[in-house]
Length: 155
Image (tube, rainbow, N blue to C red; front, top):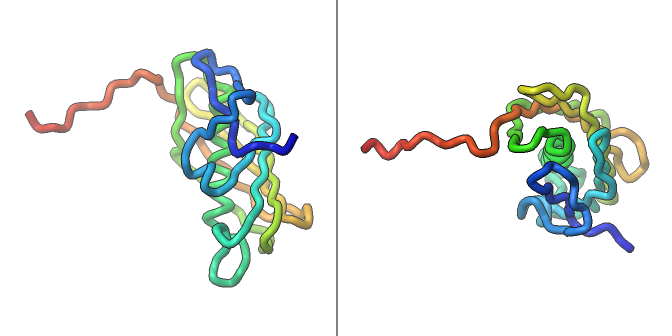
């Protein structure tokens, strides 16, 4: 069976429900991000880079690498949360090593540090030739899921 676009919805208990195959966000579906394996220690994904992902020079745009990594990194962080918690990306850094032509990119997101307040994830992205094209390191802030937002209505 071919992998489906992002299918890693999380249950309220924080367990991975890969069988549901529902996209977490519209961007992941639009970009064609597929999660092929997901666990607390590693998330593996792939994307078939086409004209949607290229810059004017015909190579994969740096922002496409970053969006791919953010999606997988967010899932990796989410799989390591305690019940009732959520994350948001507060920092992301990308090192680019080589250009990638259109084709299948693969990535592995690995939690480097899982703490009560922050989770650090490193995602390695490989080009169609299998060589490492980029590494994205991101920090995810851990927050309560039911946190109330302030009322900014001015009344």
